[in-house]
Image 1 (cartoon, rainbow, N blue to C red):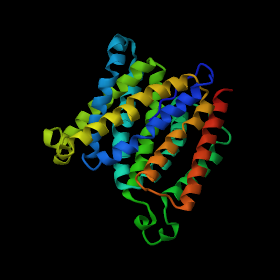
Image 2 (cartoon, rainbow, N blue to C red):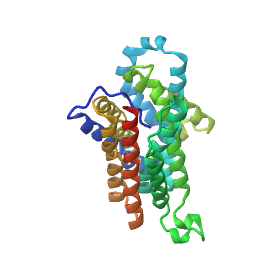
Image 3 (cartoon, rainbow, N blue to C red):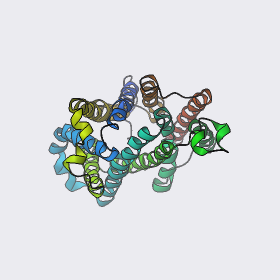
Length: 317
């Protein structure tokens, strides 16, 4: 889901902005999980895009003239980024929270850098670091143990072992968000940051309109169902918090932090997203992990951080 930009050099506060933005992103489970009780997943993502776009209009409108300068390849990257990351990936994340252990879901999404790195190699001809495959293998093995709550039950039943529908949705989400990261890099090569962030929301909203329409939910009864009518105040507050604290605000903070931070440093501070999410899903929703899942989660995040570090070191040479 994240778009990596070139940095202008390290600053003392840059990494902390990255950490703050990532941590605020990690709060979204606090609002998305209770919204799952009131709305269908695609409807949640639809309203989320509507509200974020309203927030971003002051950034978008003054820069609309820049769209005439955008080339065809940049438009292609933008359309895919908005479709895969902003719309479809977020739907699968919402479904994963609904049907799986939210803590597992948030931890396993850390595999995204592995996928996006491989995608950048195929699309942009990036070089793989010598140690990439070792750390990637460690991350994948650790990810498997994060997903499996009870390994001894795998021969009996995948579902009893912990491999639920939610874990499948989380993996699909990771692929879509990682693909969005790669295409987002293409966007940033040909479009200013603020315009790119705003237009991604526009594309995402257009995609969501079509998705909601195809599911027959572009009507009042589906967009604001009976459960939402009965809890209108709660629904409105949750949507506002999702779109602001976990949506538009961290997006701007995070990108400003990336502009001032080395990629190798930013990778560590991005882990704040997982830490914040786990504190919420485990602390408030009691979605706990077993001991082996905790060990595997730490190994996964450490391995992914090392992947980001060795890749950044290779790209800087």
